[in-house]
Image 1 (cartoon, rainbow, N blue to C red):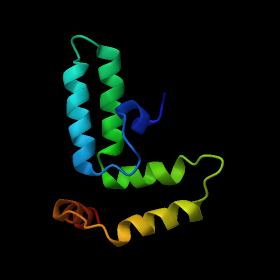
Image 2 (image 1 turned 60 degrees about the vertical axis):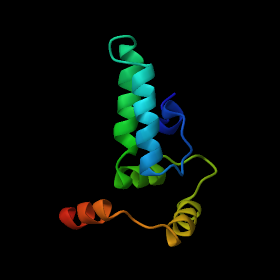
Image 3 (image 1 turned 90 degrees about the vertical axis):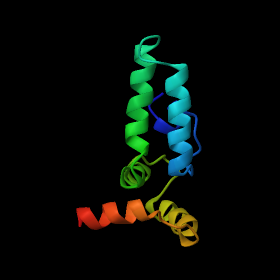
Image 4 (image 1 turned 30 degrees about the horizontal axis):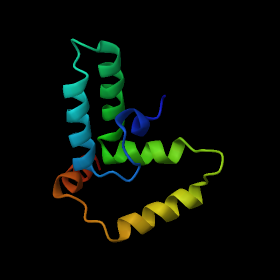
Length: 97
Protein backbone atom coordinates (compact mmCIF):
# COMPACT_ATOMS: atom_id res chain seq x y z
CA UNK A 1 0.00 0.00 0.00
CA UNK A 2 1.95 3.01 -1.29
CA UNK A 3 -0.92 5.42 -1.81
CA UNK A 4 -0.78 8.03 0.97
CA UNK A 5 -4.55 8.50 0.87
CA UNK A 6 -5.11 4.77 1.43
CA UNK A 7 -2.57 4.71 4.26
CA UNK A 8 -4.34 7.60 5.97
CA UNK A 9 -7.83 6.34 5.10
CA UNK A 10 -8.78 9.56 3.31
CA UNK A 11 -10.63 10.53 0.17
CA UNK A 12 -8.53 12.32 -2.45
CA UNK A 13 -10.53 15.51 -2.03
CA UNK A 14 -9.86 15.77 1.73
CA UNK A 15 -8.97 19.27 2.88
CA UNK A 16 -6.08 20.27 5.14
CA UNK A 17 -8.17 20.09 8.32
CA UNK A 18 -9.43 16.57 7.52
CA UNK A 19 -5.91 15.41 6.69
CA UNK A 20 -4.49 16.75 9.95
CA UNK A 21 -7.38 15.39 12.02
CA UNK A 22 -7.00 11.90 10.52
CA UNK A 23 -3.21 11.99 10.96
CA UNK A 24 -3.51 12.86 14.65
CA UNK A 25 -6.09 10.10 15.19
CA UNK A 26 -3.82 7.52 13.54
CA UNK A 27 -0.79 8.69 15.53
CA UNK A 28 -2.76 8.18 18.75
CA UNK A 29 -3.76 4.70 17.59
CA UNK A 30 -0.35 3.68 16.19
CA UNK A 31 2.21 5.40 18.39
CA UNK A 32 5.93 5.09 17.54
CA UNK A 33 6.45 2.99 20.68
CA UNK A 34 3.76 0.42 19.91
CA UNK A 35 3.86 0.25 16.10
CA UNK A 36 7.04 1.87 14.74
CA UNK A 37 6.66 0.57 11.17
CA UNK A 38 3.02 1.60 10.88
CA UNK A 39 3.82 4.99 12.45
CA UNK A 40 6.62 5.53 9.91
CA UNK A 41 4.22 4.76 7.04
CA UNK A 42 1.60 7.12 8.48
CA UNK A 43 4.15 9.90 8.95
CA UNK A 44 5.50 9.49 5.40
CA UNK A 45 1.97 9.56 3.98
CA UNK A 46 1.11 12.67 5.99
CA UNK A 47 4.28 14.42 4.84
CA UNK A 48 3.29 13.68 1.26
CA UNK A 49 -0.28 15.03 1.45
CA UNK A 50 -0.16 17.84 4.01
CA UNK A 51 1.29 20.42 1.61
CA UNK A 52 -1.18 21.60 -1.08
CA UNK A 53 1.57 21.88 -3.70
CA UNK A 54 2.83 18.38 -2.92
CA UNK A 55 -0.74 17.04 -3.17
CA UNK A 56 -1.11 18.60 -6.61
CA UNK A 57 2.22 17.15 -7.73
CA UNK A 58 1.15 13.73 -6.47
CA UNK A 59 -2.12 13.96 -8.38
CA UNK A 60 -0.40 15.06 -11.56
CA UNK A 61 2.43 12.57 -11.59
CA UNK A 62 0.87 9.46 -10.06
CA UNK A 63 -1.44 8.80 -12.96
CA UNK A 64 -3.57 5.71 -13.16
CA UNK A 65 -3.86 4.11 -16.56
CA UNK A 66 -7.33 5.60 -17.11
CA UNK A 67 -6.39 9.09 -15.93
CA UNK A 68 -5.17 11.85 -18.18
CA UNK A 69 -3.73 15.26 -17.47
CA UNK A 70 -6.83 16.85 -19.00
CA UNK A 71 -9.16 14.85 -16.73
CA UNK A 72 -7.15 15.73 -13.63
CA UNK A 73 -6.97 19.42 -14.55
CA UNK A 74 -10.69 19.55 -15.34
CA UNK A 75 -11.47 17.96 -11.98
CA UNK A 76 -9.13 20.33 -10.13
CA UNK A 77 -10.55 23.39 -11.87
CA UNK A 78 -14.08 22.33 -10.96
CA UNK A 79 -13.17 21.79 -7.31
CA UNK A 80 -11.06 24.93 -7.00
CA UNK A 81 -13.52 27.23 -8.74
CA UNK A 82 -15.64 27.57 -5.60
CA UNK A 83 -12.96 26.77 -3.02
CA UNK A 84 -11.47 29.40 -0.78
CA UNK A 85 -7.73 29.16 -0.40
CA UNK A 86 -6.61 29.70 3.20
CA UNK A 87 -4.56 32.83 3.81
CA UNK A 88 -1.67 30.74 5.17
CA UNK A 89 -1.45 28.85 1.88
CA UNK A 90 -1.48 32.06 -0.15
CA UNK A 91 1.31 33.50 1.97
CA UNK A 92 3.39 30.33 1.53
CA UNK A 93 2.93 30.54 -2.23
CA UNK A 94 3.98 34.20 -2.21
CA UNK A 95 7.13 33.34 -0.25
CA UNK A 96 8.21 30.62 -2.68
CA UNK A 97 7.77 32.81 -5.76
